[in-house]
Image (cartoon, rainbow, N blue to C red; front, top):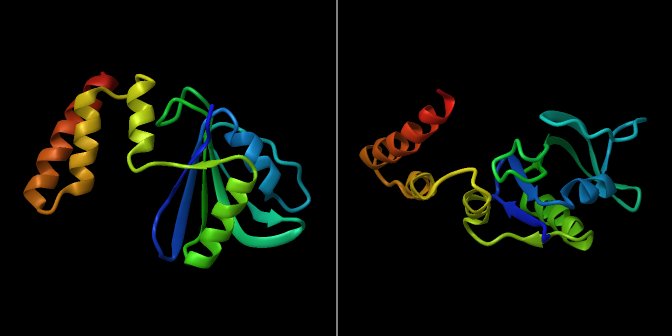
Length: 154
């Protein structure tokens, strides 16, 4: 299965997300913890460094989500790094060099839908939340999304 990444813009903190069966394999190649072997535990956050050929690229936090308990229902990890475009691009290039592929817009929502994690109404509500331009649009979109989510928790 292909690996996908999502990159968010220039900010204090940047997030790169990987989802798919090789996500953990890729992260093990580039993420190092000081004096520790990486032990991937579901639903945890680990502190360490993104490293390329023994050179530290950035100090990061990595979140791990084990299938099926992730947004996409696949193995998934998120790299929280400093958000500058240079460091984000270096991390992205390193992920790509190790077997990842860049996600299309909406890729994670699409995968969540195709894997049965969310229904079509929820997928549409996510798009509406993202594209909301007014408080009224946001409230209506969140209401549509949350009504479905609340039903799933009962």
